[in-house]
Image 1 (tube, rainbow, N blue to C red):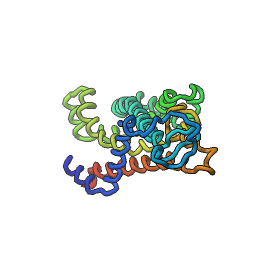
Image 2 (cartoon, rainbow, N blue to C red):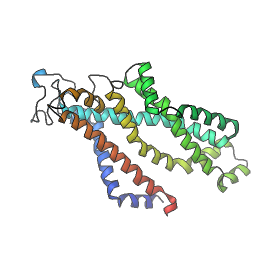
Image 3 (cartoon, one colour):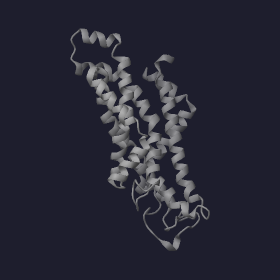
Image 4 (tube, rainbow, N blue to C red):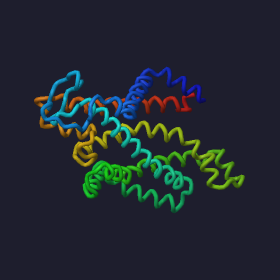
Length: 276
């Protein structure tokens, strides 16, 4: 099966393009201090709004900071924050979703009612309200997004468990008197893990968009650190004079979201056993 999945992924052209883009962005994020040509936070008013040059390959912003260096460091911030948010949500969602779906009864009923209440509010607006209450900072942005959005993933995972727990191999394990914990770890989790991985990669782009949106509103990472959404917000007053200030971070957001969406869709097709 693993070899078949690899073969499908290797023959998927858009998949290979998305892998190259994601790999390139990951290298930028990991080695930002070595790849950035200048200090991303160094202010030099004399150099403000300069065009591309050997010293500043993409020019400078309104404070004379190197745009390319800020884009590179923004990659570290955006990708790192997105994966941290998604990881924390999965830490909460996977155990709760599996437990509620497998146990059922009153536990599942209470879980579903809690999900219904939280999902009655638009997740972005609720995250916006929480960050506004807690105060603008990257830590509060991460906390707000995790508290609001874990519910959706827990509910989806619960649905996966419901579709698996009545299958013959799980019923056989119950009849044999296998402990619940062993059934979950040895049977339920392996059966849904591929779907969870696909869900993560298909939604990571949406998480990046949400982080950029909140940062654009001034509720995410704070100056002088670089982040794509905040760079777009800082560039608004200079859009007519230097539209590239908004274009570069906007293109970075566009490219990374498309890349993760393509990767997730290709992974979903490769892991879809019904197509075997």
